[in-house]
Length: 107
Image (cartoon, rainbow, N blue to C red; front, side, top):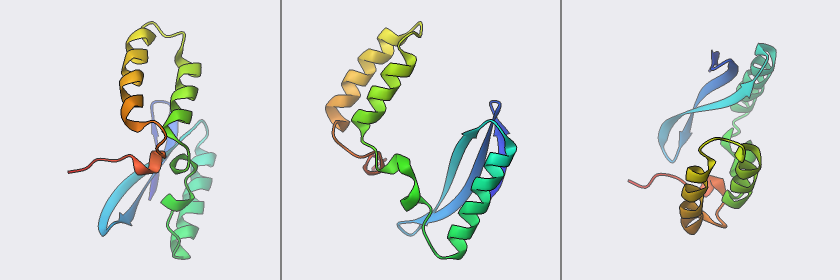
């Protein structure tokens, strides 16, 4: 696990076994390094206790519809929002009503 700065924000990177495969995950977007360090300590303690970190992530219990609603609210004033709005309508046909944790890549 490590914390690093990307795009002016602090992130934490860690690895976890998901369905038998080791996966890399990044969480964050904090303004202060101390916030990223605190999250890093929390993740390490969860892993020591044998708990899965992904089960605790809030983003996996929200629905795609909630994400789209918040996205539209925050980015409505952007120059190219009309294009993004069109893409969101297409995505909604497939992902509407699904939890974000259930949306993934199928190979």
